[in-house]
Amino acid sequence: MKIIKLNAIDSTNTFLKNMVSKVVVDDFTVVVTKTQTKGRGQMNSDWVVEEGKNLTFSVFSSFIGLKVEHHKYLNFCVSLSVFEALEALELPNLSVKWPNDILSGNKKLGGILIENTLKGSNIVSSVIGIGINVNQNSFPNNLPNASSVKKILGREFDLDVLLENILKNLKGYFNLLERKEYNLLEEAYLKVLYKKNVPTMFKNSQNTLFMGKIIGVSKSGNLQIELENETIQEFGLKEVSF
Ligand code: BTN
Image (cartoon, rainbow, N blue to C red; front, side):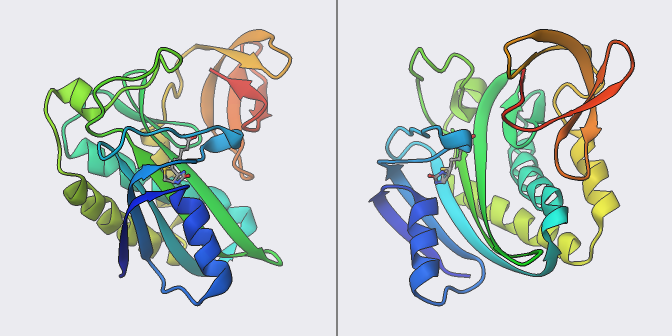
């Protein structure tokens, strides 16, 4: 495993993707930086970090025989790896908000951006970007739901140790993925899924509010919600918020 440590870069995902397009990159190459000038989040959002305070990195991983139709299990692996590393710090009420936000209570501590390279019906490799608010002291007013490990637990944590633990977990989970232990991954993910089976208010893409409860993740990776009339509806990332 190769770890490239940088002080500043636009985005570790962008950097690693560029690198992969130009040279042969070893499996499990990691790029970690103290700060990003153009960090990217889900759905074209920005990911802004306080310099040197947070864990901001990307991992390159190649896969053999991983079908695009099984992409949700890759997501489960990454979410669970981060979840378990944070769980070891004894953060209260940790969960994974579908698809892969890491929460303590209802505060977001971390996010994941997975960018896959496909060949036919296979995922041949991924750049997995992970951002965790570890030692950040404060957040801008426009991010009322963001928090950090330090804000919750009241002390600072070593970024290198956390990185090492997440990478160790990822290796373990990718082993399960390679062995096609899909049921096991699904079970582990559903156990930690935020608001699972809890009556919740959702908003659809037309801004209409509705009640329902999350019951799982569909084959294609969509969120499955049981509505009040007991029918089950599937929602993609852009189709629902809660
Ligand atoms: C999200 O919750 O919207 C996903 C955030 C992902 C942020 C990480 S930080 C490291 C990597 N580089 C990026 O530009 N984004 C990811």
